[in-house]
Image 1 (cartoon, rainbow, N blue to C red):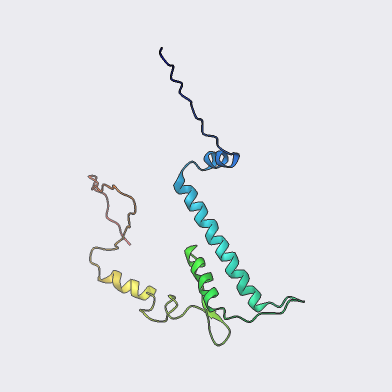
Image 2: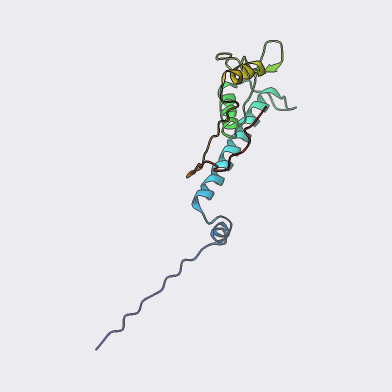
Length: 152
């Protein structure tokens, strides 16, 4: 007697949240990027809230004095991950960047218009343009049509 082999087809049951997630963001890299952004925002809100509570007195709640150094470093680190830089407070109560704008006061000063003019005067071929290409491949060819040279 031949026995019949029955194959059971098991369908994956997906919850409504899983279906919604796949419809909105089918790519796992995009999902990871959004989760990363929400985690950074959560840490930013938490550290900003702790720093605010360190300086603000709420009526009826005793104010706790803590050392805000660590929480401030977490706050500035998360801000830096979003591309935001903070300035340092001077003794006179003003907020300024130090020296050349990099925050530490070291390094060369910024280039002025006179410096640029002096550099351009030394270049015999005229003005020079530097182009940074961040996407490859790139093919650079010469133009076969002679044109009038650039004049300043």
